[in-house]
Image 1 (cartoon, helix red, strand yellow):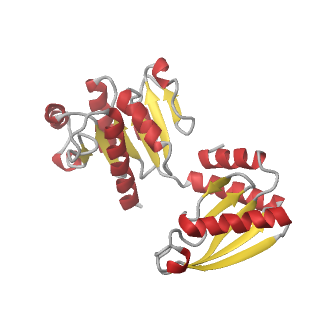
Image 2 (cartoon, one colour):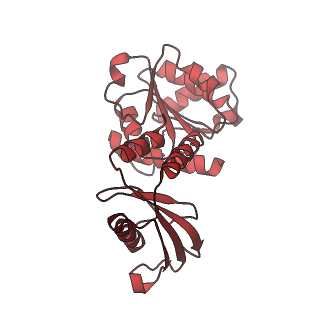
Image 3 (cartoon, helix red, strand yellow):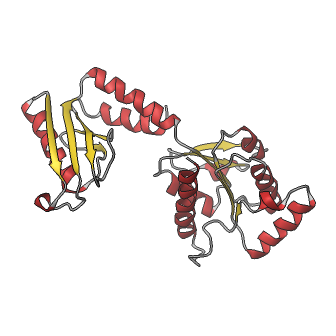
Length: 269
């Protein structure tokens, strides 16, 4: 079961009665698009339709339906000063108690959404690798962390797939088109091998390597001597996260690099 499907199943298991809130119309500037949805139970929510006063009103209406056992409801909300939200657009919402067929349809949609998520491959579970795994676990991507050391894979967020392998570069060859590759192992020679494989993937959305100016120069020399070319080399992002934030703490590097990867994946799609 995939990440979103797991979250959905866990939520539904603890909530016998839930209301489904869906955006049916989104005109002008709105927080979310048509089709966005959330689930509301008497004491919890899953998902979002954009937050703010809009979501507050939707949650209140959904809980009213649950409390009064009303099957359906609707809201048509102008996002203006009257509700304290200045987007300027207009949102139509359909709200209904989720029946068994709704739950089944949501599970199907969650599987489809998860399957469509772009893949991000992290090579290396050191300090920055673990911080990146934690950051990417919160984002709409399918993250795979590969390591050659078994003990390093302990304590990784459950949303992140982990693989113990002696030949991590094989994952590059098997990855789907449009994947992102982030290389930060404990071994520079292994880094170079994996990056070389990733640069050979013309369909990669992002190829990044942790490092320094010296490591970058060393890799360039090695890569060009071993059959690489300048065109492919130009696609490599190193150091990951760029040089706009000169902070070497793992969590900071991870935050900047995660944003960089998401931007690249968005451009690719």
